[in-house]
Image (cartoon, rainbow, N blue to C red; front, side, top):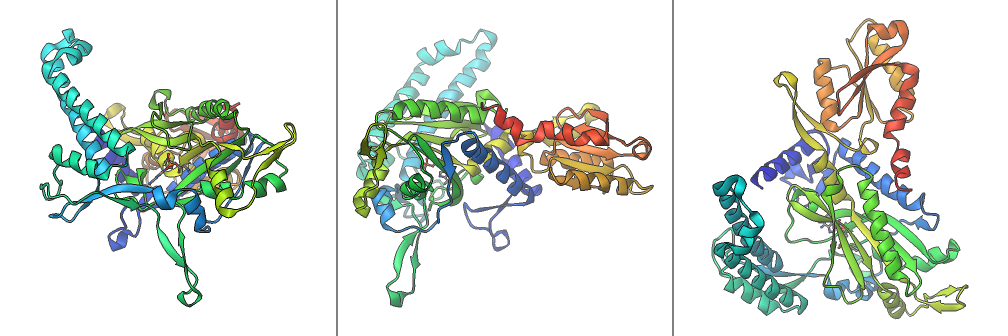
Length: 514
Ligand code: GAP
């Protein structure tokens, strides 16, 4: 675990050093849980968004996109339930004056029992060597059983308190478990209070009677309130979907793990409108399609798992997360929810407008049911970055850091390098750049030794390096070097375009989804 934490620290440092992600407002000492994407980060992020957008809107003739505004009428958030219920339970330590999420303090305590169990197992494994039967040990060792029983009891008590929204009980759990503040080391806790995660601002001048508006905490509501506009103007028939990519804002109290939990982030959401009664069939279908989309990237099938929700929100009748194995454990990257007709019915009620769909086949009107797929761009970015990062020991003791990014997502597709900065090689290299740049993000690099230049491109995940040498002037061939294998082949300049295209185009990735 400690080793994984070290790797994660290195990935964060690498993301900064190579222009992927910067702390926001860094020269003013930063703004917590807000990040900026640099010159390479923005390209990788745009490629992820393009992959999602095309998979939704090109491959499904019944899915269209929209781009709704961040500001929306405040009643929308009343109707959706966010004003009353989009809360985190908070607790303060009176000595350190630090604020915590009560649920996170308790979850960390549960994780401590897991750690204790794992330590016992690791100790025994060392002691018994090859003859160690881990399953048997877990079932019979008295210390493991004692920790497991405490963990289970705490987990049950915690779930019940959360489900019942019992804030006093959450505080009592913290007291009973003797949880201390990591800063002051004391147990001097306040009561637990609900804290709404939406950012508020004001629209219009005070003289006009300013209106409180919210920065949207999800993009989905922009889709719900436009559903009828799109259905009518696009003459859409059920089932159909609306996709949207955009910023969302949440005043997260516990913001940690780099871009995993941010206060300003980006979502890619799709609401799929279906006939009542058909929602669970479509839920199963979208669960399968979305996992296929992830796996097509080739980051490793074993790194994904579904986490089906046992406890459902009152308006949902099925929900699952797609989790990805981050260096800090399996974490949610995408949620797929069967949200019944809750949101649309609420908007019908609060707006007073009829937003029913007339089904010509059934000859009846109804409020459609909705399957939602919702993925965080930044979490997707983090999963791609973490699983691509490798420190490699090469023959001869040399080292390199390489990002094995899926080629279609790489910020730069190819780098063209003259072997030396003379004899007409730079001009020849520029000629190649001027051809390739219309289709691929292409770098020209003539600085430093060729070895150093390769390392720089490896570090940002460039799939191909093209080296122009003296032979190129004679026979129009160049060396094409592959990032992952580091193999080099002599190829004709006229073949470069198709060779690169076949590997880096989004098209090839999208075809895997058929
Ligand atoms: N419309 C449904 C919805 O917003 P959610 O589970 O709250 O559901 C969906 O969020 C996705 O948005 C998550 O799976 C995650 O990838 C991303 N996400 C949520 N909060 C985030 C945060 N604070 N920072 C980064 N990504 C976040």
